[in-house]
Image (cartoon, rainbow, N blue to C red; front, side, top):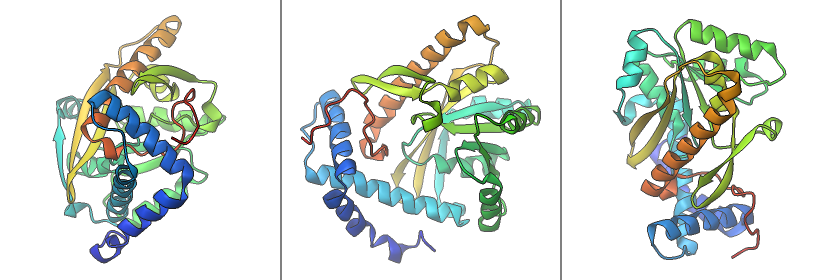
Amino acid sequence: MLGSAPIRYLVPAIALYYCLFDKVARRSSRDYLKRVSLISGTGSPKFWDIYRHVRTFAELLFDRFALWSGAGERFEVVVHERQQMRKLVDQQKSAMLVGAHLGSFDMLRIVAREANIPVNVIMYVGNSQLINEAFEILDPDSMVRVINLDPNSAQTAFELRRCVERGEFIAVLADRVAPSSRRRVTRAKFMGEDALFPEGPFLLPLLLEIPTILAVSLKTGPRKYEVFMEGLSDGSPVRPVDRKTEISKQIQHFASRLEHYCLREPNQWFNFFDFWPDRDHAER
């Protein structure tokens, strides 16, 4: 199994390789860790701080492989503030779970299974049917399936509406702008500077009139995770003329809470590219 202990011994070497030879990853990690240090008052990041950042990414990647392979029972997951989710499930109502490349969003698979909640993950993929079949083979008890997000397809909108009608949850990562969505972005203050966030993950629940819940899963120890859930909106109808303002407000709230969790576990933020559009690209 890819998540087994023997293969995990390769993690330090893999992390060191990327720190030495992947200039973009090294520069992006340093830039992010500098922002953390400015806010938290710690010292400027050194090479080994970057190494620990990359190594943490590799370690969580192996946890994901183990989870996909059907080894979810090996993980201990504690869920905080699950009352809103439980209430929605009892009422057979849908909700949008928005997350980020922070910690392991995949741990929602365990939460979904324990709560018996079908979760539909929106992703930009070429063949969602093939991915769902693979998940079914690897983990027949999984409550998670993938929906391909194609902005030009009515099928995507139809599938999402059906999910809502069935009272299922929808999940999406909301911290990266897809190539097809570069015109639908909002700037929000994050880690001391404006960053671009996609509007789609926040527009969809407004159109579907379902609540939006921030979901963050952080690793706290070997095979141990904590999932934090916070309501961002209650699903109340919003007039079309007010949607832009509401989306901007939700994105800033999302960015603020994302910063909070980044400062809690700095090494679990995994966006190894130039996240801040106006930053100085020079290697520092």
